[in-house]
Image (cartoon, rainbow, N blue to C red; front, top):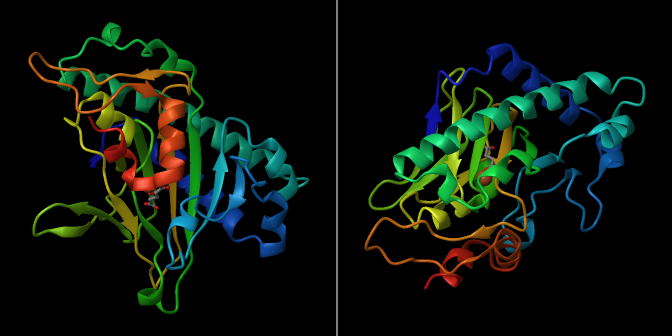
Length: 270
Ligand SMILES: O=C(O)CCC(=O)C(=O)O
Ligand SMILES: [Fe+2]
């Protein structure tokens, strides 16, 4: 996990996307329920997808967007949905371009040519997801989590976090959970499981969580970036290195993850 500055995404767009996310989460609960994620569906309002794996409650609500969000936004604001949708479309466009730039830098640092990755070109057409996260003020933060510990599944996640603490990353050794303090205008980048696999564990997936906060309503906007579902994941190796993971498609990995959560990587280890 690292933070990027000088990324070229204007501060005003970051402020706008955060303001629109707050506008959504501040709606009355019965209004938000109109945009509820359907069972088995991918988009809309709801609890974190990892909820069934944990007994501790999560002080969190989310809203997931893939491409257009017009249908759900019309349910939330029947006469006034355009501003929300336009902001989300513009933000996704900027995130896609930034994610691709980051991906090229990652390849360069691994000394891999873009042409050696069979699905590199299809990254341009993959459907990424935008996840709006809300962590309301919590009267008793010790009894809940904001978001339980997890790794992100895809290649890279770019996170804009509001100006309040909560996000933490796990560092092996004595450090343990370390706060990822907000830096004005900076974006947090998480290495996800797919990058861990294709880099043959040269980039390590970021194990992270969010703790609840008594003082303020924290909001974050996460952009999940990865290749299309049918892409074949093959660890790309420096000379003389053996693959640590067996090859499989994105779709197959996503389904292992959906069943086994953080055990998924160890299950595909050779
Ligand atoms: O709220 C955050 O800062 C992180 C959110 C997150 O980890 C996620 O949506 O996967
Ligand atoms: Fe995450």
